[in-house]
Length: 66
Image (cartoon, rainbow, N blue to C red; front, top):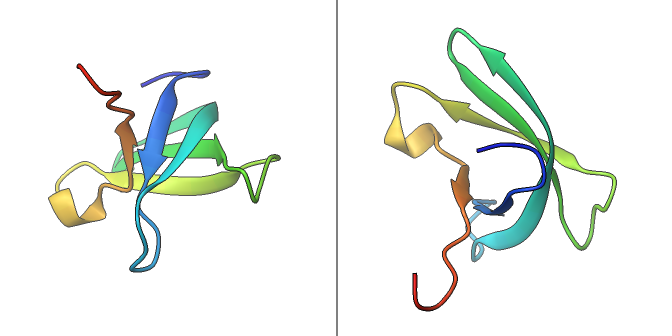
């Protein structure tokens, strides 16, 4: 995933929220994504761990028909 991609993010127990990636930072343990959400247009950082499906918070947005 890269800047300007539409994504969904997992938050505390609620439904996935749609957003747009503003920045990407890669680390040894995974990747951080700065994602613009309706409530946080300046962005919120989310971390995807490399070795854990439970640690995946940002995923590409799947539109109907894809």
